[in-house]
Image (cartoon, rainbow over all chains, first blue to last red; front, side, top):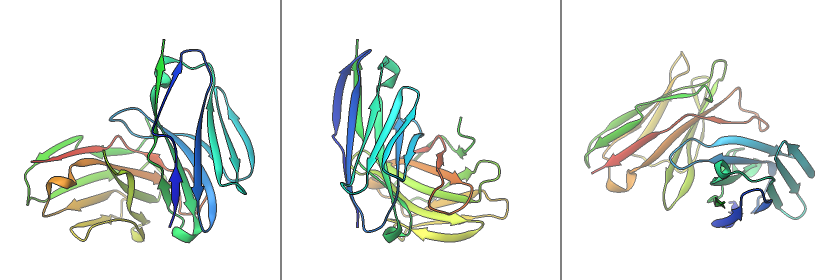
Length: 111
Length: 114
């Protein structure tokens, strides 16, 4: 099976930087995804990592260390609209290549 | 807008009833995935179809079933509904079934069982 852990809630200030961590245990790692989900809405794709290192996309970056079973999502220049849940999801060969989602981190951005 | 459509948007029904949720994937996508999201469980994978055939099963109850039609739209059937089945049901689509593809989610169907 898989175990995906991320903090339940975080709070940050508008304009600041926040890092959301995700740790996972898998039998056959095959990629890690980050999704953003506003309350009651669909998850929207943010980033994908399959190799170690940093992937940058505008204000959002995602980092992966496969040896440590660790990823983070970095959000810069926070805006109020970034208040949402951030879901870490892992694809595992050992689980039929399906995506398993963590419980999500609810981020509140305050003025 | 992801290009994935789901109907209905909201559904209210009673315990013991049966409902059908519908999903149309993005143009060109052959894979459809169904997920359930409840407050205490997070996003749970239910089942995947690829080009009309069942490809993978997750935590799907025996009371639930799905199918994918020749035009690639999919339906999720939920029967003998219980209060605990109240949740958001999402479908997602992807071009194929390899490990690298991103899944794009529809807007979801909010099911309330009373």
